[in-house]
Length: 166
Ligand code: ADP
Ligand code: MG
Figure 1 (cartoon, rainbow, N blue to C red):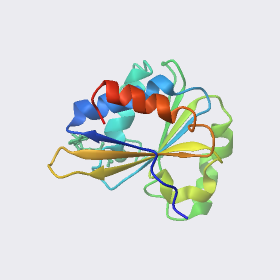
Figure 2 (cartoon, rainbow, N blue to C red):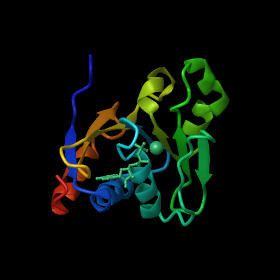
Figure 3 (cartoon, rainbow, N blue to C red):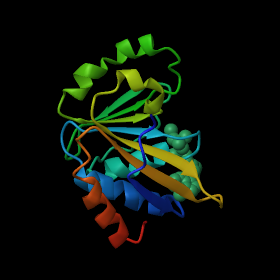
Figure 4 (cartoon, protein in one colour):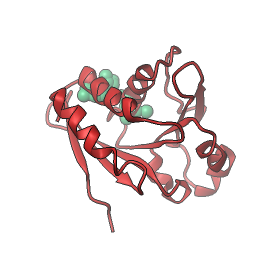
């Protein structure tokens, strides 16, 4: 069964996506896992850049498509940014040592993470990014998998509606 969407936020451009990402970052704690789904160009990397900036990561976050895993240590939390687009067999995730990363006390953001569902932990925040009507419109669908984000979903909704992002 497909889990139902808990919260929807609409973005009318990269700046609004940054606002949404900052609202998520404000609620993020050590050990969190955030999975970003959505087609190429949807804004997964754009979200991650703003998310890292909101956690005070000072290095520029770049797309890890060719490295699979980048680690940023200068922020409030250690940010692990993964992009598993090029992984086509679940066995290939073994090299990423995901269980160790999930236990490492940092925050793990995985672009295309929905494609490696069996390798994900029991609890994480799923964000499905869809294209909207105009070129710059995006729709962020938030789904709390397991208990970790369940309690925070209301806070996220409140924070996003305050900034008129929903
Ligand atoms: P992905 O990582 O999902 O493949 P990127 O974040 O690399 O996508 O690219 C998103 C592209 O879409 C960027 O060129 C960005 O400027 C553009 N864009 C336009 N509107 C938005 C929006 N509302 N949110 C995020 N990115 C947007
Ligand atoms: Mg990307």
